[in-house]
Image (tube, rainbow over all chains, first blue to last red):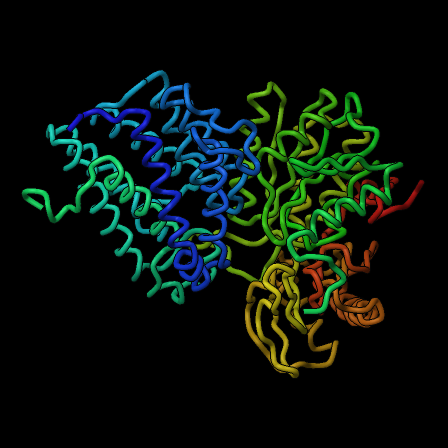
Length: 233
Length: 333
């Protein structure tokens, strides 16, 4: 098993995330209907379809300027183009937030052809910082930050501890999942859900859920094999 | 759902084509990304004013593009904020060298998309300042919410800032003026029926035949409370009291009173509301020195209205009176 993430690996992750968003389109939208405006799954699916259309071997997708234009440019520009694509197609709050996540990850990965575990952790941390700056949410506000920050922390700890890529990515996915579930009892302090006050408690945050999918699909695409099959899991 | 549309997914596209066909003499409509600019853009040496928001609130914002008001409007999908690429392209097209003011309504998505657009516009070397409008007293403004929503004051700010820009006032002044309008304006609305988003095909919320929603948002978001329908004077009392207590407005204040239809309410009823508002304010020792009555910031086919009061001074009054020539507001020309 290679301990570096290649550009092909990043592309496999993006495809896996797009597939997970499509599969969970109704679920994400239903979560949003409870405390928001019932479009998170629809919007994210539209955005990731547009991203897919720009990946190599996409054929002749609708809306893509040039099919496969991302094939030769390195991880950084790949992620930046993903960010701009999401910004211009997702809309709502999720567009700028997920767009900023990928744009900042792209900046952090600029020039790299492949990423070590430490570079992967640093890249994600830069992305999460960008999301925090854009959305001004803090831990516990019942937002995507509640899934992303624990994931970034887990990645950093794993990288510092010299863990394998697989353990690192699955650890981040697990941290994101716990953070996502922890949003259920919270009262929203950001976004449309905040107007509901106490009525927002008891619902899982849709943005934290799609953020968990992002971490989960990174593990699935880059370190295949369920975590239960791995030693120590 | 009964609507004069072809396919729900084409409603905004068909609308933009209609605007382009109707007003080619004064507007240019660009699609992919979508924006509407005044035909004589860019106006050299003038601060360019760009706004935008979801479609379904017409005439806001596209109907306010023209001399004395907006230079560009960026329409999103129905009730969905536009994206930064639209705002960036629009800003580049209308920039006349004096910078760009972005007028933003306070919704989480709008604010983030416009802030991101501001970053992109700045990266192009264009001076830009976003100003957020948050005048709706119906929802709580606190550290624990996304803050108040932007509603009727947006129309007033666009008109007043547009006039200041025509006088070639610099960007910091026009932005300050926008904040001044926002600071002196308060609004609240009421819905008698829901609206129906074309793509959803069914009403956004349910309201009984004898019920109204006090404090409604312009996307059908719930407000303060649901009540049994009442005579106009009681509804106006409820809306106006919340507004007057908030600023607060006081005796001797001169105000602009804006009675706005939500899209499905006849002008006749808006004048009934205005009459009640006029009597109520007179009784409190306030004078309505300017008014605006009509459907200018709408929520598709929702029945209902909103009231916006703006405390005026000589500067705001003069700028309100200045000529404006848009498809939605037109005087002095």
